Length: 188
Image (tube, rainbow, N blue to C red; front, side, top):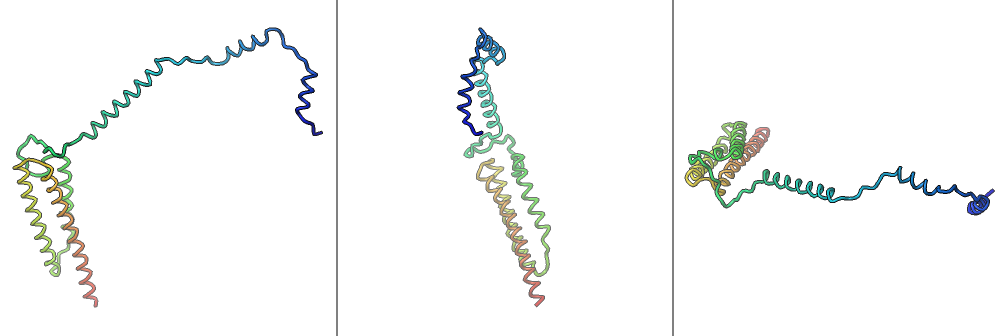
């Protein structure tokens, strides 16, 4: 039952000597060419359309980059048409947001502080330091009005706001520690 297939095919081709009709190959090739899709010749137009698409894409990318990342030269002062600058927020809407954020945060945190006769001395020390920072902020604002906006003054104003917020946060931490210590002493 197990026969070698190769032997079978050799015998089968010897027994069958079939001849195809005349012109069969030509008709087959003609039908084959008719049914198969014709190959498109590559043209310069296709290459030019791809190149134009790439150029347009690069142009749009460069324009978007310039629009969203307009460089600011940090060595040159920011020019403002109005010479009567009153605060940091009057320079630009972004500085206004920064100033409002820090001032609101400082006021919010100060409103959360619970003042008692026991922690009044600690609170007064922090309030004195906050007053010094506020006076420095006022001095920097006057400098901003006199000299116009420049990087050093703007950075100093923003850092002053950061220092004040950090000072208020430290005050809250110290008061919490003080209250915990005084509670522990009362319970003993």
